Length: 545
Image (cartoon, rainbow, N blue to C red; front, side, top):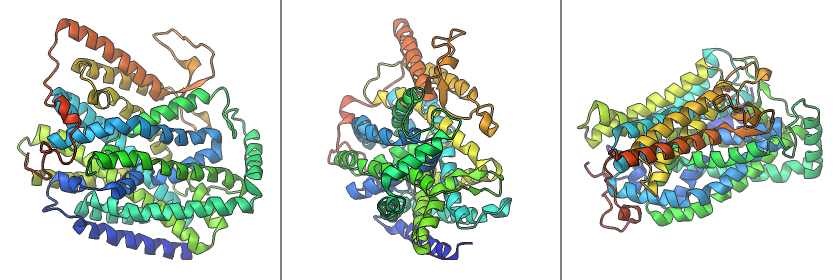
């Protein structure tokens, strides 16, 4: 047990807990009994708060442990996270501004709300809502993987249910202050989280290379390690086989990231269009941080870091690479600060994700199918309860299912959420796609994507199915035809699935237009997508439906 680290960690965790409860009074509106206030923080966050909130939302604890761990294990492929966050902001700049405007005019809280209004179809909205909830659940579970990696490094590494007790305590605290304060809690805590993360990473990338002979020596050591592994794609440079996978994974991840409900929650909580524009310019600062963080995977190789064995599964937990590195190379008190930064980095996105999933359940399932006349107060109550269910569902997942499987599920979640691209992102610009085309495209993209993922195995970890998201082109079959027979070049499954989705959506739309099938009723108009905070058409915050 590392007592000094544990004391520092516990103190900072206590500070964050107090902030979580205090947040209920921070920038408070007239009531928290409304989704605008509880689930979107009153829709009035300015540039700085939004920057910390969205940054804390997109750059999660799992990012801080998994990206360096992937670099540690595979090398250059782990850097896919860097270009995808670089290309993300230019791609989503305009769609997010349009989403904010139309949501403020009509009072939309979720992406499924927008789809319901755009196409007048509760079935299409249900598909988007269920996809969002299912794709978000393993993402929340992955925050626990990062938190447990830190707890395990500090010596809290028991087996069985009692081994997860510290995790239970952390998430009970998270559940309580999120229930009370809503989105204001992670927004306020994000200030602490990001400050700690920046301090830790900047100190690490300046201090650690000097201990191991500089970056040149670190790269040489890393390449020697990769040369000794059987995988031909491992190395500090990409190979001919994984370059296409790298590019499609980066682009697919960029498109998927802003489709996740929690990404849109942070955007809809902002005060106006200019706030979003300034954030799209400033958020790439986090990408610099991510690049520096990924380099720690190479540093860990030079430091001779060995992952800690998970007592619950008996296998080495590679997610402990960065915590172990900090514990080995830094004084105990600073390692405690680093552990707290990673753990708090788990709580912020976990809170936002649970709120986003709860909003989807409340608006697009509970109110649509179970209680159509629900008042704003009843909606808020339902969302609070749903956020608890989501959080503890994620905890149960970690306890009763191998955590490694949650990592694979997150890859599945990315492929799934990408299938909402036509109905959510493209619909912000055009209503050309027919309602039936969008549904058919979703069915084909989702079905084919899941089938391809099912067929990907990894004998090294004893898994025959759902063991990754990279498909060799030689294994691609179109009704028995193998267009790239024998090719070992790999591609991201999500890219193939969303292309199939779009092709089917186009074909069915052409048929539906020719047959003049009814295409739903659009409650939005062109001007809705351009209004700003000072426009009289903006719906008042926390207004009755």
